Image 1 (cartoon, rainbow, N blue to C red):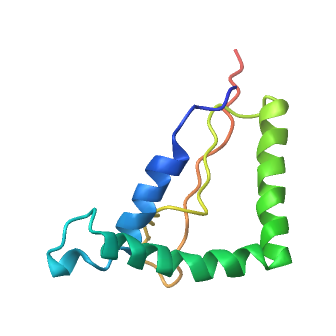
Image 2 (spheres, rainbow, N blue to C red):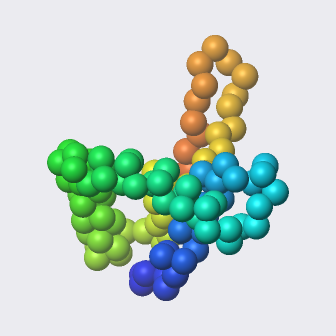
Length: 111
């Protein structure tokens, strides 16, 4: 398994801008400097707080180390992070919502 080359500084930043952008209703252009600066102002505080919280940074590092360990052990075919980005949940109409999980390994067949 190898890491897929991406452009996170470019594409993830653009996706975060889309998620947090509140300037769209004003009719201004996406590249409007005031709109971009408003985005940076929204991100600056939470980022500073996250980086100054030891448990958050430790958990973030642990998650990265665990991913590296799984890849090194050749224990999966595809891995992705679900702690960020947009998530959708299919809920079964019962008294308690359930998250359905798929098995992580192929079923063993016997002949």
